Length: 359
Image (cartoon, rainbow, N blue to C red; front, side, top):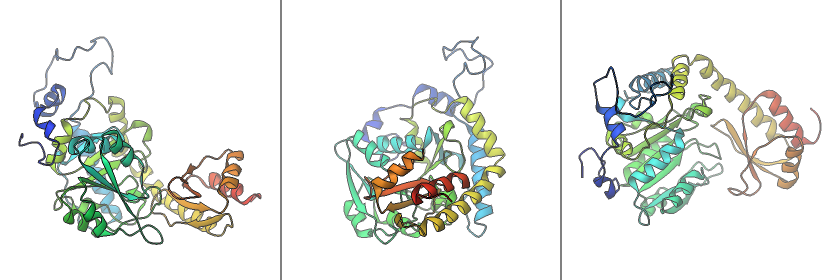
């Protein structure tokens, strides 16, 4: 097997070479006055050329920005310097999930492990790729504990941990995750889609010492760029290099790259919004905690709140009549919904619909 491919990758990757465009654009230092290799239309305008895959400048900007934000929110935590070859941009974090499964799991042979309840995309894509799924229930009053031995017994090729968890919004301690990484031979994927809203720092601080750790990030949630479809994989360089063998070339468009870079270089307004959202989340949590329509509400470390309704059908109907759409999670936990944190006006209308009386 090629030395650049991770030893736990699927054996079939041994028969592959990097796609030509990726090889050319990642590893060629030369710049050309005329590129006559790409069969594009020279009269097509600004976006006639394929987007630059290397994104060297964009990677530098992203790493500098998250380093600055980590220093702001967690000044006492010593975060490592992340190398450029430890980062891969993807089309949303969903592509990151798909890439990891395709690169490391043998269809109809390997198994993944998920923590239940959690983000259903892990199981969805695992089934698409012919993988078996072992589910370990999250325990505790707020789904904050994992049975360590159950995970070890499952012996998965990949363990997925959404942290903060979707849909519950609860957090697993980083030390628990590191212990799991050290206890299994498979890869541990920590999906940090909502990490900016948590009070716990990113597990990024352990990346240099934990080689089987893969971190997924997204710019869709806290960074407010869902429409640009930009995700990030942070991992050991051999993991990143392996993912490049199967990633579709040119997925992240030039307009997306430009707009992502612009926001990352001017992040102050969007970073300020994180504190506003957390405050609104706490205010909404307090208000809902007093309502008879709510059977149970879970303390959240994300930008949503998970709750169980006393009369699910009645209140879902009331929300529909009020023209309010929430995520029905009754397939995850009976009578449950997930409500995104929004504006005070939207929250007032939501509470009004659940209370059946004007505020």
